[in-house]
Image 1: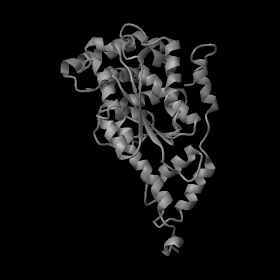
Image 2: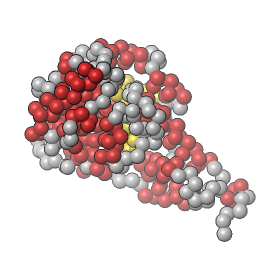
Image 3: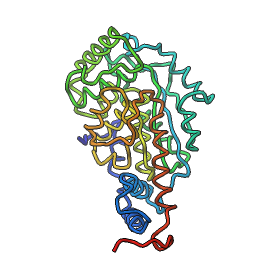
Image 4: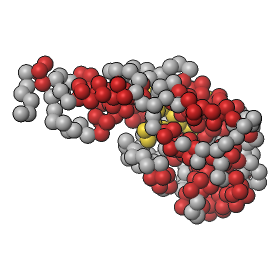
Length: 341
């Protein structure tokens, strides 16, 4: 659904899609050639073999490696919280950012486990986006600027980028975006998030219904939908994914909210997510349906629903294992093992 815009704040964003590199076939072929000589039956490592090809191809180098993984967490607040759609107050976003910065969150422990860096970007937490049930969340200029800001995620030149978020109210935002993009009933896309009760869930569904009805005439333009129904952390994740593609950096994206960001890119150009893998399928009910819309199979399904990049960070271990298996296993000749006839 590539849109045509000129001389607008989104023009430069859309122009990036025309400069996307393709996967480096030479690196892929080198992985395939070595894989055929390793001491295992062909295909016996299943998807791990595919991940090694994906990693080298999108790094545009051989051998594949995961030496500098980084998880980037974008934090934003949302005016729709005023509709009573969350179990926690908006100030928890800033409190959790402090928790990330002092090493006390789950994502800190996961990143430490796999030797990954962790960066947290605060996105004007003191100024929530507008209430999407009443007006657009952002104007076009600020949305485009936030996408551009998200591109700073690759400033340290990681070789694997994991993206996640923190934002009280953002499962409501993701549900509204998905309902706007794909249709269906609001209830199809709304879940309990951080644990709202039945009354809170009903308010959440009603808020999504009202928001999508208000903005329905603009939902065919993915970037317009983003700025009307999205949030700053989602816009920044869009920027991070785009920058990683241009910088030949493979991406693991996290749960429902991060996948909603990926869906904006997919709606503009499905090939725009070829350098990405879905790290996990969260327990948020609509996440599986969203992944199906993107035709993506998650690496993990552990019934997690924490957010904060936790699932993406956990999947680093799988990608690291794939690279280490490819690079470290002996060939049949090296091991003195007879290959099949």
